[in-house]
Each structure stands twice: as C-alpha cells, then as structure tokens.
Image 1 (spheres, one colour):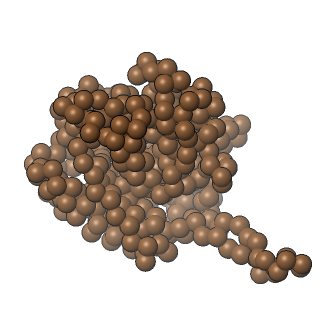
Image 2: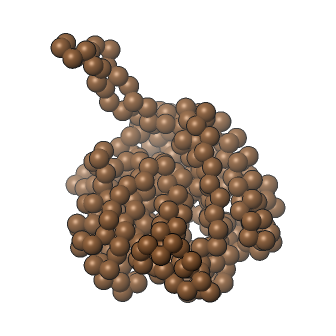
Image 3: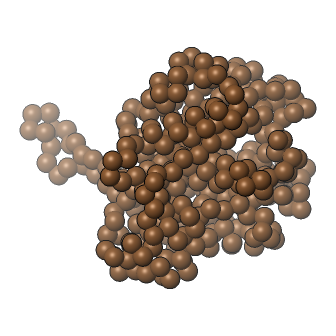
Length: 330
C-alpha cells in the first residue's frame, strides 16, 4: 500500500465583505448579538458581478497547482465537495475544463459541512490502493444562494468560499494521512437540511408532482448538542486507532461552524484553545470550504511546522461527522 502526501493548498473567497452591522440593517440583530453567539464578525458573499462557485473553486485549485508545480494534465482525479453546485448533475467537470486537467476523472461529493473530510478520505483511499497518483480535492460552497436572509437563525452564519488540496501517492515512510473515522446517523437528517418541496398541484396529464428546493433549515440547538457530543468521541476513537493520545495533537482543525462549538469540543478534549485553527470570525461558516480554507490560511501564516500532528474533524447535515489525522511535512 502506498502513502499519501499533501503537495500544496489553495483558497479563494469573494471580494464582497459583509459585516454584522450590515446584516443588522435589514434584520433585527446587532454585531454584539451575532459575535457573542457565534464568534462571527464578517463573511464573504458572492454578489453583484461576481460569478459562481466554479470561479472560486478554479481560483483555489490554480493556487494549489501553482504552489505544487504540478502540470494540470498530470491530475488523475478531481473531487469537488459541495452542497451548492451550479449544476445539479455535478460541477467538478467544469473545474476540470477550466484548469486544463483533461485527463482527470471528475465528480462531486455531497455531504454538506462534512464534505471535505469525506472527500479527503476518498482521495486518500484511491492513492493508498495505487489506483491514481495525483488527486485534486476541492471544498467549495456558496450557501448564500440557499439562505433565507430574513431568517435570523441562519443568515448570520454562512459565507461563501473555496479551498483546495493536491494529494500525491508517495512511499509509505512519507505518508501524511495517518487514519480516519467516519459516521452517519440518518435519523438525525432533519436537524439541518435544504429540503425539497413538491408543488401542491400535479402535472395535469402525467399526475406527477414537481417542485423545488427550499432555503436552509436548521435546528441550531440540536446541531450544537450533536457536534459537541459526537465530534470529541470521533477524535478519540481515531487517535486510539493510531496509538495516539490527545497530548500528541499539535493542531485541531474543526469545521468552522460556531465558536461555541469549537470551544466546547476543545474543552471536552482538554485541549488549549491556542491549538485551535480558526478563521471563523473572518469568513463565517463556509460549509465544505471551511476546513481547506482555514488550513491554507494557517500554512500561509507559518503556523504549521514539519511533523505537526493535525486532527481534522467535520460535522454537518446528514447527520454526518468524521475525523482525519495527518502528519504535516513541509
């Protein structure tokens, strides 16, 4: 079995910066109310003449390609983690075309805020098994398009963005993806969703009911309880499978959902908040983009050093959650 190394990262966010005060202009809220409950101070949104999720994903991908010096023609697979594609049939192929990776099989993976973790694990398995050599993993979402901007419980949370990683097969001794642990509980699916709603009147001849997707629906209290109970257990199980302990963790990178969740998970694991990688205050909850976006930023800030153990955990709609543990090599 081959090892997996991380060659490079990239990220992209829209230009439009929307503050809490701006949101307070059209709903009953304030900067203090939002910040105290979420830790979010601002977020980036695709607005005006800015284009689509593909533009963000392509920008993040090109950054990673440039840093890695990999020819796009040598990319074997592209996995796009997203819940907000601009084509319901899949958007990864559009990334393939725009970056010139014409040899790459490309597909979307939908698991909301857990999507990047599941995509990273999927890519690692392809490489471990020797099926492919170079894989581009992209996490991108524009949930602003699926947010009810009159719903205070959700519109304060979400931002748009994209992040990318390039993984490459390597020798076992240089392996960086140490292990993973994944879970789903479908009985909890209604706590966070973008539900499909049928029209009340069927087609007059075919008698079939068409419909459309609604805005984001979230039971915030339940999502908080689930994240705080499930994520620490997932992390501990993953550590145990690798004969590691909490003391071995150099950095904890959680899905950037809410500062209260980040602090509660850290407290349950007895991890100092100084070991938490976070950019939540700047970008809000960017769903599948949050982990690669925060990772790229931490690398650019030179926070992460060679041989650091990074525990990555995502959680979200489905209800799905999981952990990947990596050992960083510059």
